Image (cartoon, rainbow, N blue to C red; front, side):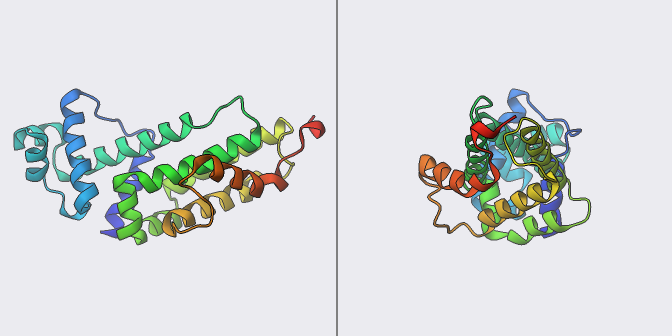
Length: 214
């Protein structure tokens, strides 16, 4: 099951995978999410999803082909929803320390609060570790690339100290994963403003003072 869950995570971050966005498919995926959040992917069945969505069993099969297709579609939709929520939390016009703090806090909060991702972290943490540590991890590659680009742009704008962005991006991914897998923290993630302030303080050594920017 760990390898299957890891594959789901990798697939969800693949930009070439299409999403199902018609009303009936959304209804079925909503039912699948509720069931998976309550009992896990291991126990998800087409019959249970059909009953929860109040549709015929064959309707689910026609939309998704089978259980594997349904799980894949659910993972893709939910991970992309999480990414959209995280992106909305970051104000592009804000100062770099605020942007980075908002990005970090939003990522940890969304992952902890999402019913399926939170269950994976709580019940099947080995799936997340397997995906992040395997060679060619799509999740790690996407997150690392995104953060590297963000750091490089901020360096070019004189907002961050110069240097190789790759190790900083890797450290950020590793630290973020640890907060998901080990949720207890002195950082008050339940209070967003306080959490952002704490993260900004931690990031302060990396951020150039406004008066020193090019």
